Length: 622
Image (cartoon, rainbow, N blue to C red; front, side):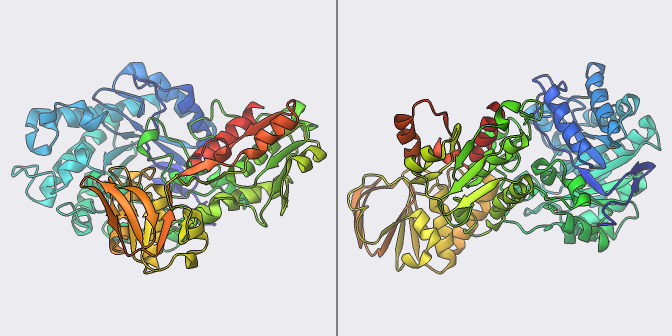
């Protein structure tokens, strides 16, 4: 790891190592774009964790909001100064990424595209970027980054997909680059030639009609000549959003070949980004000369101590690429992380020492991720929890979650927690079937039930008959599923069962009552799941209710009425889950005074992030 931890320079800016935390819209500001304690705590955790530089998005113009702190008026400067002081306290640099507020800076819809912007407006945009950079220098920030990727205003000008102008700003790659060049020059003029300037751009836009990597290679020398001190090479655009924050379905380091192509054309440092999620891969990038720095974003959401632990050799809580917390639309109000329940809660969720727990006999039933998380967090508080697991190995439903295509990274959830449990000396007893009698004989002072969930099979006639298996059984033992297969339910479990079986060459038909397949999957992952379903020739029937099952016949009701489909050998019931919490009910009846808590699916079936978060919140509250 020697190269990863060597100092580096961007312009005159010296960085203590080669790991950078890239810009993310985290939605931790208040509604007016002011820095909050929540954002300060988030930044401090990463700065303290050893990253060399944090790039924070800042709105130079437009209507500010919670997505990123504003830098459009002096009233915002004190907030930025507080972030600067936090970073500098740990030897970390703070750079602002100039990132317009709202969609395309909150402009009138008629001005959304480069074609509609007149010269006066273009001049205002250039001046706004330059003014923001000058303000950054005045505040004492360490540099500025221009957001020229992902189809924001500067990126749109550089894209043949968006830019159809035939004047000085369009028609050729060089002309489409003019706005970017003008902004760089204006920043250098107003903020100073020596003020570090990074330009972020997509290696390619990965969409028909968008900019290719060869065109990008053609324009990057112009950015260097204009005064850019480094290039930060991302990928994609909104129409290929599945690559902007690529999920586990995309190989690690998938953007590296294109980054290497860009590096061939410039002499300034290049920052590599996109699914560089382990220290080993980051080191490889540097050793092979593919880039000069590595930007590790989601990896430092999962573990803010990523850099420090990589240096010390401690276990790192690795990113899964699941996008459950950082990209899923329902959680876009703020960034969270399935692996790290403290992400976004650094200022409120703490595992403080608790003397009152030290001598308590705490028993946790279930060694899935929620049970392991509760045990670890309680141990961090000074308790000595004991975990009972009825199966021969820990992990719970993660055993199944990692089986579908492209989901092997889910195993990291268990691997990290087991390594932490070992480090903290937590006793995990496998092969221990918990009964009310055994539990009461053990005599716990506090009991946590983390027994997970089981498939919920709806009361459909024939669904308990021969040839019908649950989604769990189909994933655990695919040999049970033969011939022509019908999958009842097109949600998360149903689609995963379907793509798993299709990958084995099984003919699959999915029957879903709703009007869409894949409820519960974030849209980035769904792009790849749909692609695999199509490649596996899976038949998808939506708005289709199963009325009865009598294999080989299945009677359904759809928009055309009730009719029978035939020829099926197996039916897989994948219609959701229900809590497995009978122990809690039995113990409350047998010993009402015993404190009993439910976590994870035993409390409410949900996603992996829900299970981990519920356990962490409970552990912190006891």
